[in-house]
Image (cartoon, rainbow, N blue to C red; front, side, top):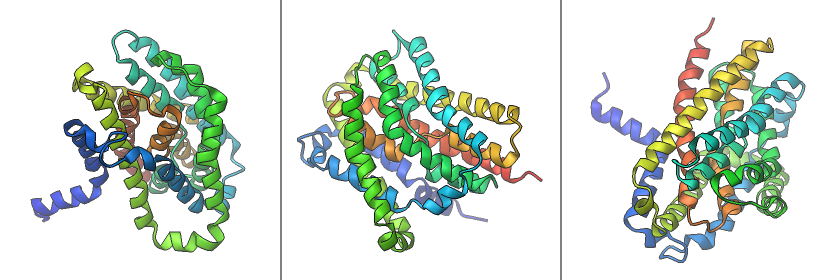
Length: 329
């Protein structure tokens, strides 16, 4: 029987990133001048380098062979991309309409941003593997979603941002994402023949760099927001509102993607790919893209709250769901 202390240590090792994210919020709340723009750590000065590094590593780890294997299953592709870039934005608009007047504007903008984001590659594929689903289709769709997001995310946000009381210019946003996201990704892909094997051997270490950059962005965003009056204007109830909104959104999408896959007559393996790829949203790209799209927005900390909560809720919920799929005959 495992000792309670050992179980606690195992949980801490497994969930260290969640703990670090919460720790960054606490640290920013107690000492905002540490991570704020122009503060002691000067985190804002490293933002562009951090964004480029994340997407360079993404391109370096992207296998075009695996992507090509899932190309032919067009019904899965349609359902996943419609869920990501049509269903989610429509739900975001409905949520903004329902929450107008009683939810903070920054939180509504954050929900609109969450709904405009592409799917995530790593956890979508990992959950599909665990659930014994169509892995090539999952790899293809998660990758396609990430590439489409460079144009689709600012376009959708430009259409829905007014619900959160903000405006976003489409072309400047696309140009900025092309320079800071697509270009490093292509450079990483071009370097794959030289560095791909090295990355595979050092994948865990490189993931620490991704997580470290995200924590830097979160600390900077929340420090700026706290300094602008985040807790003074909203209080701790903001966290509950963001958590409830993210959980409700995930529940609706999981139900609708499962129903759509079955109505389309897909196999269980294809259904798994649709459910996991069509319900996921990327934290690894979402935080850096928020920095690019919103810049020094005074409520950036509030804007990224929904994707932070959604990321954790989707991991927990989809892990349980993947286990249930895996136990099928």
